[in-house]
Length: 213
Ligand code: TMP
Image 1 (cartoon, helix red, strand yellow):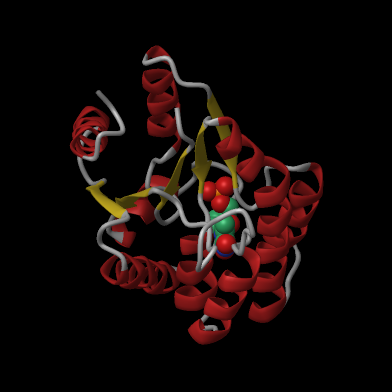
Image 2 (tube, protein in one colour; image 1 turned 180 degrees about the vertical axis):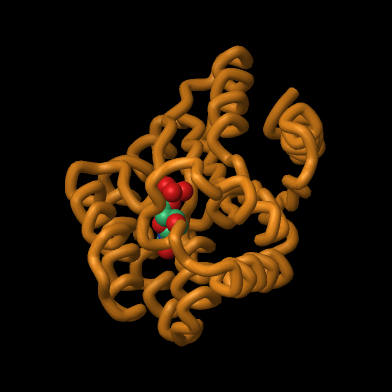
């Protein structure tokens, strides 16, 4: 089997986690080896960078550099070896989150993020242009007002979760812009419906792309 790289995106509160676990179970039932991982994080170094990025105040460029530094380590140590073995890699967030949060949310320069994306995701083993991108990105699209209700009082918020709704409006617009730029990669799932209906949308979208039988 050839490797499969699926990422999951959405604003905080969009409800990715249960569906990532359900998809891992479905792929394993179909005979695939699955690697479950997340960003920022996924390696000891990247988890340390995550703790800094999510808890310490810093400017948007510093934040973006930490996200991409964590990503480079994660890509080289975990994602590329798993794809080379033919595993399915399910990654909770990837570069679209940097474009949405640091680009959309914080208003940071998208051209600089694009340069960092090309540096960090360059993999010599790939045919030109040698840029690793997810095969599919499942985007849980939830109105920020609904996400705010879901998050209220749910847990102690980190630096991003405690941002005002206007921030998440910009993050959501950032995701929409990325999806529009690469519609073949993005599977948009309307997330303002029951958990069962969301899962059905994920599963049917992935069946249509040949990821699930
Ligand atoms: P999580 O709570 O879904 O694990 O994500 C961690 C937080 O980090 C979430 O609020 C989104 C944010 N984030 C960024 O700001 N930029 C990034 O590149 C990534 C991957 C996450």
